[in-house]
Amino acid sequence: MSDATVARVKELVAALRAAAAGLGEVRLMEVCGSHTMAIARGGLRRLLPENLKLLSGPGCPVCVTGASYVDLALELARRPAVTVATFGDLVRVPGGDRESLDQARAAGAAVKIVLSPLDAVALARTLPERQVVFLGIGFETTAPGVALAVREAADTGVANFSVLCGHKTMPQAMRILAAAGGLDGFLLPGHVSSVTGVELFRFLPDEFGRGGVVAGFAPSDILAGLLLLVNQVRRKQPDLENAYPQVVRAGGNPAALKILAETFVPADAAWRGLGVIPGSGLRLRDAFRAQDAACRFGLKPGPDREPPGCRCGAVLRGAITPRECPLFGTACTPQQPVGACMVSSEGACAASYLYE
Image (cartoon, rainbow, N blue to C red):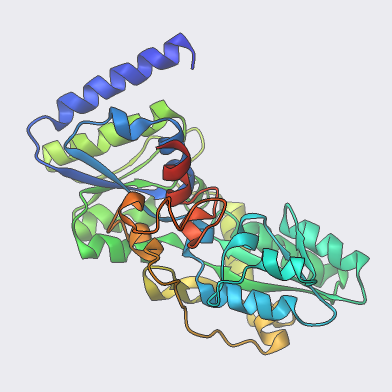
């Protein structure tokens, strides 16, 4: 860090301690997995006042993707003439029987890591004799890219491309967390908010009396966001604030919102740790049914089964910290992960193990 950045961090830490003084315990949650990793990498929890508890939430897309989705991906990968295309993190997430796509690939399954959904469409063009299925997971941030890929395949006649939809949207999950109580405010996801805008989270102060602040990802951005939340608690005036105006606009990203609305419709979705949340997922519109892998291959999800002893779901709810899981750092490590929270580069357990 530059001297100016260090000075700014010290200033914010001092202001946080002054704002939190005399308040009793203040419980805040950072929702975004990128925030979780940035907080751990920067050692920010060690700088916070003792009465400020910062918990991680369900903002890691790989982590909240349940074992039943991985099981469907494994089923596809084992089929002849099917190639599964995916982002890198997902390949190591275990399914219900503890097998991962990485292990299936080692046993001969066709699993390809791609950098974008459009790369998967390009892969399908080069493999006309095979069906290429892209594993579409993530929140409002990644779903527009998948929508573009679906429309590209449809418009250019790439008939052997489809998507296994596992996308989720943040507001419904946050409603459940806010309604459960025990949290005084939320550090809102900057990437998601850049697409959706801030007002989508207006229900936090208006309906649940909980504050929300959108923040960036530098240490000073995160500390500034936490300071705004603590000051809301001190004033007893929960509000919705945007501390990331250089990226997050009031109306979000109109182009991204338009393509989402034109390509997807809301659907029920299963979240690791939160169960099935009505309307919290996205499925392809009927006009794109031909690109829907679940329809194309007649797939039906089974039950979500967690490995014995794994508390990843409780970590995602903010019910426990990673180190309170009995498997943390012993049976479950980044080299030999048991739960998804130890796999992902945005997972709370991986962040805690690597940096805290």
